[in-house]
Length: 501
Ligand code: FDA
Image 1 (cartoon, helix red, strand yellow):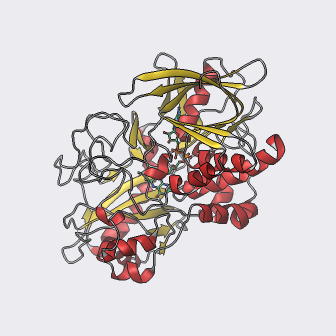
Image 2 (tube, helix red, strand yellow):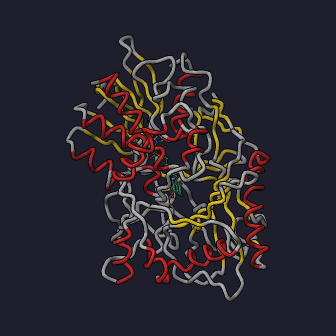
Image 3 (cartoon, protein in one colour):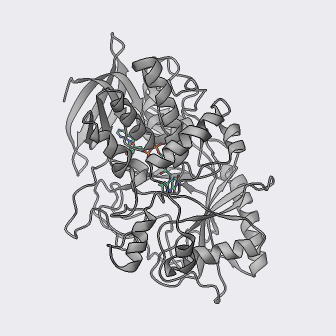
């Protein structure tokens, strides 16, 4: 309500935000969460909450009149995207010139749209990325805690070996192994027992029914089924959906005053509110948290925020590519949308790559192997605040993606040489084999130990915290969701003990 005062306000409902809300509430502190996206709970006319990748409708994307899927074309034809009605759909693509960033919108943030791969980074690399964080505590306590709370589990290898739906994964893994590369199964937050029932025909299809990118109706243990359900279960957490935070100020008592717009499905403002909070936790994601803090600093609302806000951003070295297999190596008409394996060539110092073996569920045989490569690209971008547009602008140029693409190319050239295969040029637009102009893993902007102390407390202010992917400096070596969660667990434990309880 307008003029309300709350003990703790959390902006966003993704991983960092959800951990914050749960642990604060468990410590007895009432929490209000503000989320710009929808609460995805009511089924639409078709009986489902979310739409599929092959028949996207207004639920698919955030205020677009046409979908903008990462694979824009097939055989160079514009057959992938569809005209849709503008609506607060679940997947957004935020364009910043040479880099487009895909993010989830809705209660649950990225957990609604992501592949759910729950990969713990190599310990030595983690130590390089976040040297000030006690790795023993992370690996002994916070990573296992995060995996448990997120309900990470691993696919049964017999199921992977026998199911038609994982032919794409077996084909790509066998080819990698034949080329002398290491592969590994990785945990995920999809309920693999549920997937067995899908295949047996005893449960509605979800991962096996083409649900990808635009939300998942059944098997994925997204945040509304884990951390957020538990947080609401305390009775102390309130979530306000379609509430977009615009501005953060401080009053004379040192409380934070947050200006928030409550919007309708046409994106019209229904009400503008101010909410005061003693403690303010930012979990709006790398882009969202960085923008809110840059705006606050550069408009003079919170002038003492650190110089380094906006720095240290990277796309986790993301590069997408696809190979065209020989006719005797099909990838399958049926494909599960949940990736479960990776090619791990991170020990190759000249070209470190961890490549997720990704599905391409087109409903027809494509003979294509698709990969999301995570590379050790050292390039970083930064944001500046554009006052006229009132938004944060990312400075990242196409050439900054090149070290990552070169590393990915060296790995996939090796695979192509071993199998006499070539790249697919028809999928990403512009006749390209490598898509390095978009990412799924935005990281940084409010780097831990630079813009904040070693626990996410913003420099220059008290009782103001960053909790999400903005803390991680640009690259992590693996998919980031477990690390974001585990780091938030670690930071919140320290903060609740010292600042609040
Ligand atoms: P996150 O982005 O999850 O949540 C931020 C929330 O804040 C959003 O709901 C947003 O709407 C809201 N918000 C932003 N600004 C706001 C404002 N001003 N006011 C109110 N609310 C605001 N990772 C992984 O580990 N394994 C995987 O398999 C994948 N796969 C994958 C696929 C795709 C398609 C995407 C887009 C992403 C992935 N990821 C992934 C990445 C992963 O989902 C991502 O790193 C995390 O969701 C980031 O978590 P955060 O807590 O930082 O924010």
